[in-house]
Amino acid sequence: MLKIFSSHFTTTNGKTLNDLANLSELFCRSLNAKNVKKVAISLDDSFDFLVAFFGANLAKKEIILPQNKNFEMLMEMPEALEVSKNENFINITNSNFAEFLTKNDKKTNEKKEKTATKLSLSLPFFFQTSGSSGEPKLVAKTLRQMLNEANFLARHFAFSTHETLLASTPLTHLFGLTFKGFTALVSGAKVEPKQCIYPEVILEKSQKFAECDVVLVATPTVLNALCEHANLANACNIRRVFSAGSKLAPQIRQKLKTALPNLQIVEIFGSSETGVVAFDNGNGLFKFDEVDVWSENERLCVRSLWQDAGDGVPFLTSDCGVVGDDGAVEIFGRCDRLVKLHEKRVSLDKIEKVLTNSGFVAESFVGVKESLESFKVLKNEKNANFESGENANLQNGESVANGENVNLQSSEKSEKSENTNLTNTMLENVRLFALVVLNEKGKREFLNGGKKALVEKLKNVLKNEFGSLVRFFKIVEKLPYNERGKVAKKDALAKLYERAEPKFEILEKSENSIVLHSFVSPEWFYFEGHFSSFPLTPGFVQLGWALRAVGEFFGVQICRVNSVKFVAFLRPFDEVFVEIVKKEKRFEFEVKNQNGRCCYGRI
Image 1: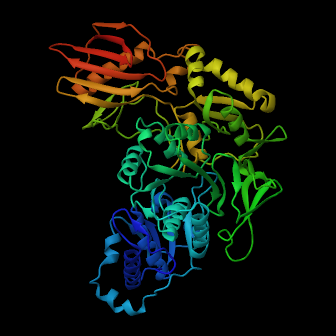
Image 2: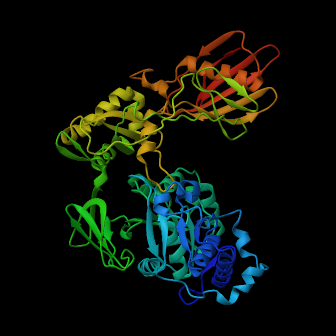
Image 3: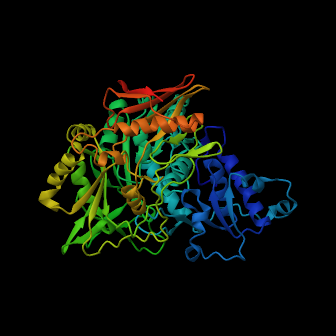
């Protein structure tokens, strides 16, 4: 290990390559002493992860990296794993990791002399893929493939010992393991071992390591959240961003560059099977020099030193596209995102691109619509926690107190679907739906003309090329991205059928008063018909929030509403505050937006 990786490798909390080598050998001996056969690694700390990973490799154990560190989901794949009850298959977690580093274990010490000191470069380990386009599966990799890829990336992007890597992506994902793991190890870059998911953490860490050039490895989902942070400009120590997992929206790149003009943004294209294939630094997508890419029956084929499993066979991807003589790669979309409509193949990805270029849409997802009978949406039936800062539901329907937790849900209940079998892409008479996130121009159109008028404009944009294939449009606050920055089919369908209602957080609370806060989302079901050309929050809904808040927080049965007055509109994209003050024999309430009162009264 000491000969393979850079001796300059360190973590931000002072761990070195020597520490990694010594602890990996100790972990190896412990696995052998405990007679472990297979290992799943579900650790948060990346240094601990590498100790377990290399320790298991030294011990010649089969290693499996569960998606999102979810061991239960992994165990739902017995055919792929070939796990039997007789095998000692263990999941290494934050709670049991330390048990494998105990030096006083007699059996461990007895096997010290037999410990392997060289890593096995050809021993396969397995990633569990996200399954965004189908069922999750396992993809095999070897250390040799990872080293080939990391050494190339370290040279190509000139990683150095003066850089510190922050990552939102865990090492159980290939993107995270490639950049934060192996590329850092071979280049000697410093690594922050904690996963940085939230913008506040990224900003804090980037300022903490001001003496270094900070490199951020993140998905578009995390970068989008970072763009919305008020203090984004303070992240000036972040010099480079590497993004992968899904397409990086142009507006995210633009926002980052506006706030941080010297920032280099590199989008990586690839997959778990191929590793890195191409990159886009803002000038278009180009294949890497050491990767062969060509089109075969419209599908891209890939061959590289880190794709080749030793048999020399290239990988036929699910991406449709072409490669130019200059290495430029044009992606048309995934072949599993092609549907047959009226004897014609249509790319759902291309429809999304047209919608995004309409001038009204920030991003979108287009999918095949299932009937509600074949896809029952499971609504969240958990009790809402009204602890300060956590979400609370104030919704239509009968409210029921349950101890300290309260659930204020609609009286209409949904059934749990036993079978969420998704539609085949080659169905006849399929109907398409679009989840649409509006940009600023789109928001103005929605406010000025309502959903119906906006949808008509979107249909006109699609009409020339796609006719009326997209029949259903839903305006949403954000797309349901998973941890890998992808929209899974089942999550998109769930979003389509979701009956969205407000979620409030508690800003202030005392014995005689409470202040609740939320944002008026365009996807609240109230706006489907109230009013069709001028969306606004109905007055009875605002009054209902006050009535239910009084009942839930003060335990009072409402006798009557003495007075209520509506003085201003509460509209989509507004902030909303619900303030309740207890007097001697009554409650006074106000519903306000960012500009002032919308309604007030006495109960």
